Structures are given as structure tokens and as C-alpha cells.
Length: 147
Image (cartoon, rainbow, N blue to C red):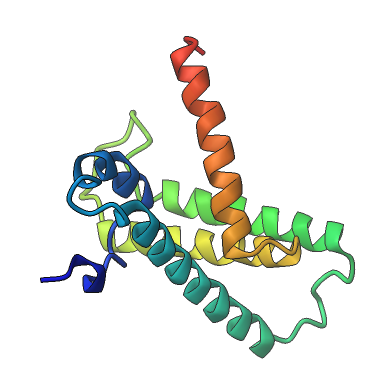
């Protein structure tokens, strides 16, 4: 079986990078294909978000980039609070069953606004991956330095 025809769309890019060293002797293009698959996935998410935004009544949406980013930050914060509310963060209250399905829905709401903010700032999926890798390396170096 030619591994180049396998689908890696469900493989996390970070995981792909971690295991690519192990697979590189038998599959030298593994990391590249996994990264391309993640870009395709992100491209799909960006396209879906653009389609949704094109359907919306934007009459109350700010006209300037700074105003739109500010509004999106507010939405992200509120959705993050909604996600937090799915957890038992109140140590003084009797815990309830964690509703993972509801938590995932709230997380996806955050993704909608993060992707919209990315679109507002002119970021492409490739830009996201490049910036993520750049910042990930900074964070890794911080951990190595005892940050």
C-alpha cells in the first residue's frame, strides 16, 4: 500500500511532527503530507467561516478593523466564559456531570470568532501555520529555559 494515498486529515499536526522522526525512514514525506492535510482542513474552516460571514447582516458590525477585532475579542471572551460554565469551576458548589458535547459546541463557537478575527486581519491558513510554528518554538524554548 502506498502511504502517500492515506488520509491524514484527522491527524494533529503537532503529533505528526512528533512521530515523523520515527516514520521518516519508511515514509520520508510524512511530515509534509500531514502539514498539507492540516492546511487543507484549515482552508476548509476558513471557507466555511467566510461563507457564514457573507450570509450575515453586518449593519451593526464595526466598519473599521480595530472595531471588528475588538468586537470579536468580546465575543471570544463571552464564549470562553460559556465554555468555562460547562465545567465545575466553582469549588464551593456540588459538582455536576460534565457535558462534553456542550463543551465542544462552546469551543467551536470560540473557533468561529477566532477564524473570523484571522480573516479580518488578512491571515491565511498558511500564515496561521507559520505563526503557530514560530510561536510554538518560542514557547518550547521558554520551557527548556525554565520559564
